[in-house]
Image (cartoon, rainbow, N blue to C red; front, side, top):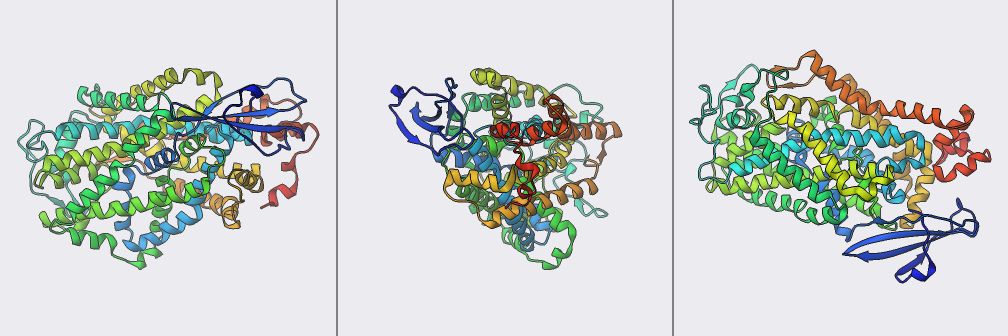
Length: 617
């Protein structure tokens, strides 16, 4: 809680006494003032201690309604990957059998880590960097790492939303522009008939009108020879990107007062559209065959290591842990909010959405396979190719195709906007909480962040921008995010201590986490993450786009991006140990002891130096 002082004469709102704080002395009593202004609740915590004569006062806004927080978390966690990634993985890895490793990793790692981040942010009421007052040594190792990763992701994620906006504008026409080959951007190889490369068993999408519209009509990829020949930003995509940035700014500039209202639309609209698309999709010829293929169970695939790796990777990225967003959002909760229930609800909704979207996707893929008389495996794909090539082509064959196209790309916009809002909020909240002077200038600082993101994103809307996009997508939040979550789990479960963390949760919700959660936090989840980091390094493959292979220097730049965030761990740890006073033992003691317990270090009481701390559950 934020500490402060409040004159007794001003306590005209609801005032509740809190627990006596052992850290502040036996006479320290905390009072919490809850007031409401313009529909937004603020908390004001006061420490009244006779031994102290001066204290400061700070206010932190909270969500106006509990549902605002729930929708914000769901909106962030449920993003484009739920539509273009999970269904494909499920189909590729044994259909329904893929749910076995997916649910297994969800239970032992996904939910525990999700719960951990919500509880961490809510108790400490700080952003991704500020929460590490519980263990200052990890502020750079985790706090600044996840902030940097979220910033990197914003550089290219907003471009996907800009593409969707461009397609949305293009849909307001009687004939969709990706239906035929008689447009100015089409090549001589354009054909309405799908062709195959039998050696690779892949459809040659580059010859279809939809593929050429995306790569030649939108991206103008044919005007670039590679990442060394980017060209200038395309004004059409730049305009769309500008609209996206403006929407993000005015959704974030006032904090949760504005973003909490925006998510009522952006988090709920995708479900309305998905249901509508499913109702339409199941009526198409071949749809049932597509859904059967999606759900077909092949338990023999469970013996393949790649299936388990895909499931574990999907869990890590689909829930959004490690980006600092969950910490930022939960930091605006009321102190007594039931974060345990929130973690179960929101993580379950995310997984169910992924599973449900598979029915929508494969009903249309089954239809496309039958329409072109090809095998489903030749149609099924993931990534941008699914939502910007395959799906638009399927929609173009329907009656009222322009209407369905508008509906579909509105869904993509809403899926992308609230996830982008979450990433930006993680950066803004994390830095504002760390550098307090920025709090009074949130509007200007938010403008600085979104404009900086916009300027870097311009590289992704050039003729060769898809190469920059692919490079960032491959390196910005891959191994580095797994590494960041691993350090986060170790910092909380081992250095801060599972026992102490459980005490914090009990103080908030009235009961301690069960043995299962404590075992996952201390042993299972860190071991899982360690394995994922090792596997990620061991199975690394250089990025590519189609047949284009990135040059060595581009891969070096990519690794520099990835390492720049991971390097914050040792860099900040060394910095912290250098600036702290005293012997190395004293420096280490201060670095791994929560700031509110530093007075114990002065008395030589460092619980992290005792074996009991490391064995405690």
